Length: 463
Image 1 (tube, rainbow, N blue to C red):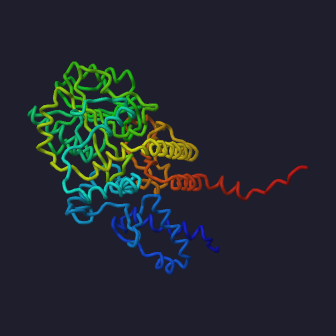
Image 2: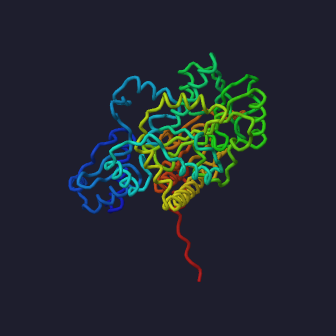
Image 3: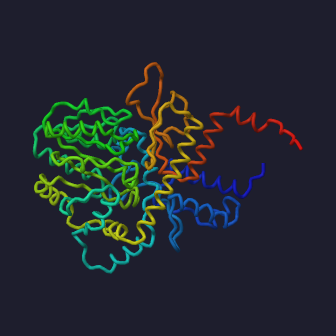
């Protein structure tokens, strides 16, 4: 069969993306020049340009004038920090995490910067001409964004900034260790493995509470005084469930009765932008101690993340003292970039475009799963970037598992049926990739039907 220009282009794209996802190509690696690629594949330079432009739009690579194209799809060692390629401890740590973390993290890190390029250039230009580094951060734009997106209006002094969610949780954990000799933390199950490992490392007593289709099983919360609860009521990761109104009320009553401290992790609700989302727990009660935690990675990309922690007023003095001794005086350059981005007149237009892309991806991904896999259960809120579904064991072909669909143990086993639960983070993929996955699933799962339809004789038209 003679290859067409389009099939050659797709072949080159598949080869490069496979090398990036498998770790053969690392972040920072230069790709061959357009001339060399043209000679290697015996195609025109225009075809190679189409390939590189497509990979750049997907977030795999980034082009630099007079330098070439560099892989951005995988994190490697930076500033002396060991990675899985350089440290045996890092390898052991990565393999101990659930969700096939190495492969999942590669998907997460594929788009290191989602902020439009002209904001990045403007921020770099300002920093190069500034002789001093700011140690304060203007919070007006962040407060405006919180109000628009989630209806939250904290006081400026309540807002604490971190480079990521894990650092914010570490501050809360250190605070609990200062207050109690044997602190207890209650975690949703399943939850992010890094969160659980953090509290295990700090010798917290960990109590796991499962999640069903209505969210956290609040009636199983133990009668323990001043326990810490870390939960995701608005959009739980990875099960894509929301805590019901009845259970929200039960959680509030439990926290009031036992003086519990609740950390509301809202990290995956920001792009809901107030639509089809329940209000944060922070707005539901003034008698409970609530931490509100979120991050902007879905807006800005992994390399320019900013995590926001709204601290309770009654703990603000102690927390600020701990915050200032554990954080650097000079703020990261990305903070100023994010502030300029959130305060720009372009931001609302960008956010609307991002939401439209998210909805389109969600529609195509869910249609593909329902049409090919026919799941028993499917949780997929409209604005979320992932879904969670249950299938008979062995239904998904091996080539998709831990590549696009990530297996979880069932939180509530189905009696009499052997099933598997899967997370599908489709927001980390391009629309073209999602469409390709749907097509491959259809061909693999219904080959007989597809062939019979293809080979069936055409009916002559009746006139």
